[in-house]
Image (cartoon, rainbow, N blue to C red):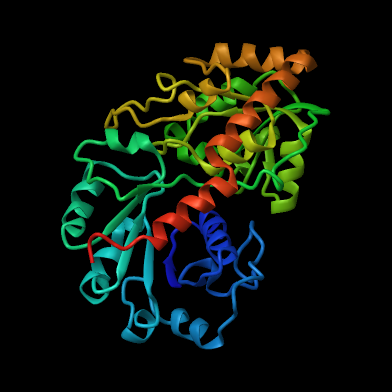
Length: 341
């Protein structure tokens, strides 16, 4: 199957294109992986299984995703559009792509306005693949044709040891994004732990907490070695890739509960799924900073507790996000006849 994948998030793009390529599909991207050799893809490597096409690179270099040409559309059987960018690629190209099988792939950024927008395209044949069952709680939910979570490879994210007795977090521009990534709660949970670090780009304003941007391989090493991962979520996402990577690795997670992750002044709905997922592993989430700090301190002081959390948490992560499960779901979805076209 020939698949055109329109991306707005290079890390998720890497995961899903890598999986689709491993499944035997011929995938081309109009995001970071339009050149699969990895020239533009920090902090993720290239995807060797994708074929490099000099002509495709030339076409996409001078054509925005909001203005696909016939030459860029017609070779493909399926077009997957990653939600985001105000749905520009979908809206601008719809009349030229709707004769194809078009799939809108949610990524945890939907709001009431987004649902209203895509609902009208669904009536004309658009298929919707969700990433969390919690999206059904969004006001004006536009429905779905499948629910396929993001995935992580249990063989790639593994072997947690916790020998580096520190708390960590992975976030981009934590302070600049403020309440939407729970800056106060994350930093509040790390204060007093002198070796705590926040890794990711755009964190130069965090002082000694700044762990800097790290490579893909180094990120996996940090997750394997650190003792505890502090997580606050990203509004309005149900869960994020950093949460999945930590959970799959097995590093014990101290996270905000749904109540603690609520963002003042924005649309309130039951969308945050982290508390439920961790609860399946017997892991408690917390409403406030003080309780999070206490939990971090307990895990740092108790290696046996950390190991116990790690084991059950990782098994739950494999159940929810394991690569083979998600691969099978994509295979079944792509192989079944489209009900809309």
